[in-house]
Length: 161
Image 1 (cartoon, one colour):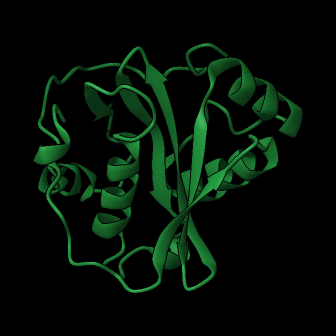
Image 2 (image 1 turned 90 degrees about the vertical axis):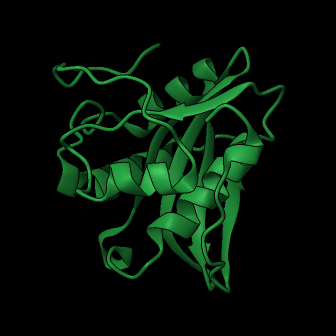
């Protein structure tokens, strides 16, 4: 996404908001990575300890946001600003929230917030075969443009880890 003007709003969901986790808390990321990623074969960081998560978050200046619907956690996102390019490192809903029309509005909240974390020129993310089948259409509906496609294996560790 090259401009906040490219963001396409979804129908708002009453009670849906973001909670910014500050200071970073490795236990939060550990929980959501495991719970959200379990269905999608997210294994690169599944064995990390809470301390490893905290060290990773602090050394890479990752911003974590939790999606909340009516005071109940429903998903999360991890963001990093790399010299004006904000990458959504992780985004997903808990299994109990999938299929309820929350993916689009949740992505919109995270993308909108991404444009506020420093001087931002682009917001981007990756997807792969280990993602919800509707992920890519959801990203495009939100205003993200397809930039590149590759045949790559899933990395064993995260960048900077």
